[in-house]
Image (tube, rainbow, N blue to C red):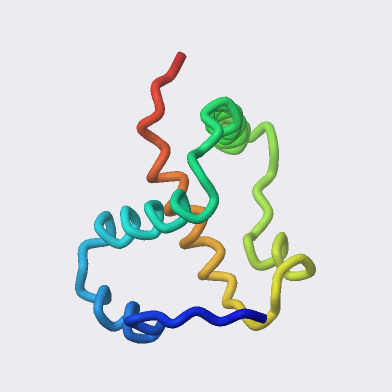
Length: 103
């Protein structure tokens, strides 16, 4: 594994940004991901936005039964990562892209 010299390590970044507003932190993370992996495929993003809307509507109407997050991720995630971390990650992206225009 190749290592890269950083001016700040991950712990220092967390400490430095701990008192920042959530939107500012989300913006920095978004910028880092875009720099590393490129821009978002808007068609895929739009499709996921639409799918999320359908799933929420199905839950709110009672068409489907909700499954607790603990059950859904118990067998499919790294046990070292708290489930709340996955929930926060997903919530961030749900909020971040909830402003997409409704066609």
